[in-house]
Length: 214
Ligand code: GRF
Image 1 (spheres, helix red, strand yellow):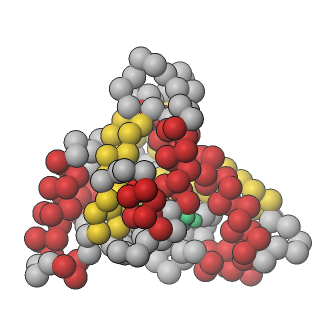
Image 2: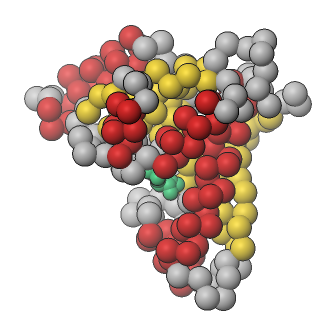
Image 3: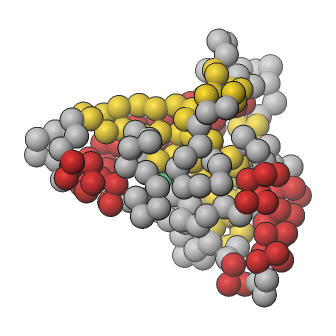
């Protein structure tokens, strides 16, 4: 996968929680499977595992929360400043529980990715996060679920998909067992999706992403 001819793509990772997707991205970079460099980790949660992981791996780590700023504008401008200072090329949402401000989405148009633990457009949108997604999938009686990496637009979970993978739903699944099966897939497909951007293979045509052959 790793291509020696390409410059590592510069990633800013936004995360609010434990940071297992961040960790898998870091591990894939270390294992030379992903041509990327994490230039900054940003979290709205000062106690997140993601920030701790960044610090332990000597990656710039910033706790940035709307509450630290008097106005929405100064908050957004600060976020933008941090992203620009680090020469960010791609923004990676990895369990980020805040809506990304529209100005940032416009500045990084088609260059912000998110991962969602279901097959979008099913079981996405406001309120469908974490265990609520898996509870809803089980309640509906679905036979498959999965994970989706998608480009972020102004709404929750509505941007064009880049990479999707299914997992089976088993008869005796609980939200926790299903979540664990899907998380494993997330850790595989997020680095792969990012690598597609590193290789410059993704173009967006309306709702469709086209992945060029290697
Ligand atoms: C993942 O399940 C991801 O799909 C969702 O939030 C969770 C983050 O988990 N967006 P982690 O913090 O990366 O472990």
